[in-house]
Length: 157
Image (tube, rainbow, N blue to C red; front, side):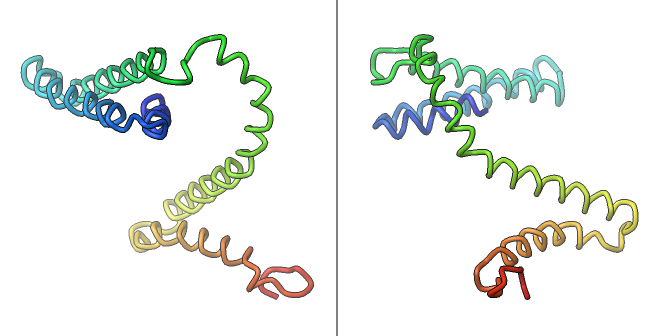
């Protein structure tokens, strides 16, 4: 999916909005056509629906790659162009590392809350399973905001 949506935004941003929409339509129409074939004609059930989705996404991905390697685009996808950008890799990793760490820690907290609710909460606290991660996000954003930071720099004091 990322091999379709990521380059698709790039294609649209370069002025080829119709091509970006065509990419989405190819995947959707292929999935609509392949689903009944795999579900009913071949009687594959849920596995058939999964196979139809994967094949249609692969078709969209092939379309995107063919367009990015073609003549219409300004920056062509080729091995020589990809190797030139290796010097840009460390700054890009440094730029995205903080977001990666924040989202990873939020995911770990959500897993901890969910496992604690599973162990100790049972069915009584099922409403809390949705609210605890939201509270953690709210508290995290609130505790780091300047309004809750005192002159000494401690949150909420």
